[in-house]
Image 1: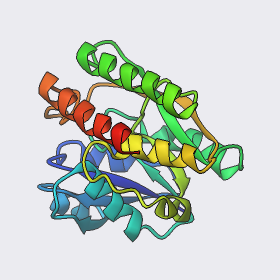
Image 2 (image 1 turned 45 degrees about the vertical axis):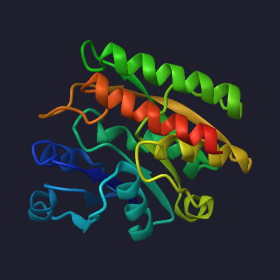
Image 3 (image 1 turned 135 degrees about the horizontal axis):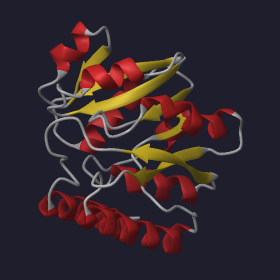
Length: 213
């Protein structure tokens, strides 16, 4: 079994569809960062509560609580198809990669232009900085739990996804990506891509990581 860490903040609308779509062998570990715990519990998911707000805080709490050798991360807003988790986990399970990301292939209207441009700019800086051939800092990803813990990631905000890749590359991990579908989220507005302000906040947090590492 592989634990799938699902950081949630006011994602009650999307949680049922996301949990239903999880393939056999992938267990949900919902990390409630506010407002979604009861829905996940009623659906039988294992839930932990992380009171400290922040995407990285929720992801780190899930990583510490996970029990499987490999762990996956995925947004829980319904924009990603949980059925594609085996495609992301496969290269890690086979030993071909140490960290695999899902590079988003967006449906029309699913990925606002401001968010897409910000992501591409960060991916380009990452390629120059760390030499990893990534086109996207995708939120669906897989790696070894013990390996990730050994990286001692420090960011607890939106810099977490970038710090993971930078830290992994710095210690010689093989980092790669596979394409995954990306559609409209199910209810509510994305904390990152839903507004220019959200995207700028993510860029700010990730730029801080680039400066510090």
